[in-house]
Image (cartoon, rainbow, N blue to C red; front, side, top):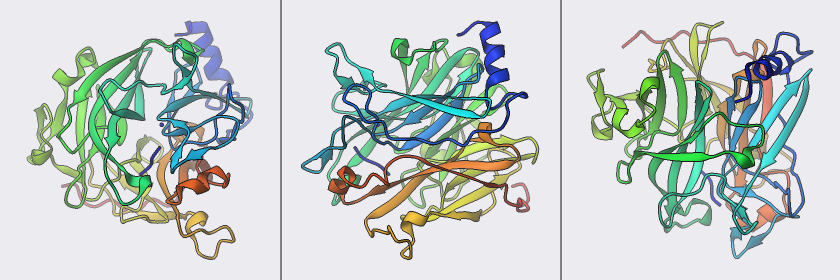
Length: 376
């Protein structure tokens, strides 16, 4: 995976009209993520890259382990980084603009944007959703663990939710409230992807055993005041049950992914999942479809082979691995837009190879949709 992070109604309406999603925009924007050098504003790469559209036309980008500073620095196989950061993008008249935000602590030092609530842990901020005027972000609890590779020396330890009421233009002023959701020990933590399904927000979790299936939980939008109390999971009998028991949860995908996107496409009348092929460190990105967010899902078609992992590529390096594929429908115009990130097992290489470790976007024609299997 990775190592290392309300405007008024008039303003909202204006934002929608001027954004890349607005009817009067001159064209769609394709996201780009330039490195930004500088001790005070430096953003030198990150992973994850979930996007959450706000009603006013802005997009909130969620980034994982984030390198920062005047230049990339790795000390004894440990990069200088914060564990999470965010970005705010706009697309006005077809012009892309992205501002990065790394929080500063009381002493003026760089800090995780979402602060860990448990000792000796950190958060990888993941997917999120908007309910009313508020922003919610899933937070995967992570801690150090022994491993053969420093790039994989971690283990998961729970899921919490971050709540930002009416996010203002300046994220540095956001007040963040934290809600516990699933405690340590479940070995399946709702965070891999979220999707709106009528009056519920679906939160998908990768089960950390067997074939690593994807299972589903949900929160009623009316129950966000106490998420842990109102959480439900889809059981093996197809019924929604209170709480979350991964051992009794139904696999909605037999082989899942720790990061993916699951989005509904009205023009296709299909749910679409974009993810890396769930076999080792694959170079292949899949598109899978289903008539409902809970399946049945197609096996998937290969839509992209990342060039960084192709031996014939002139910049190929055997230590490079890629992950974090996810779709961003708000930037599409009948086509497909997704991002992915490449990283390296050779951690010191991060300091010198500026061609890796930041999200890369791909825009391509929407693939022909495969027939779905019969409903189960």
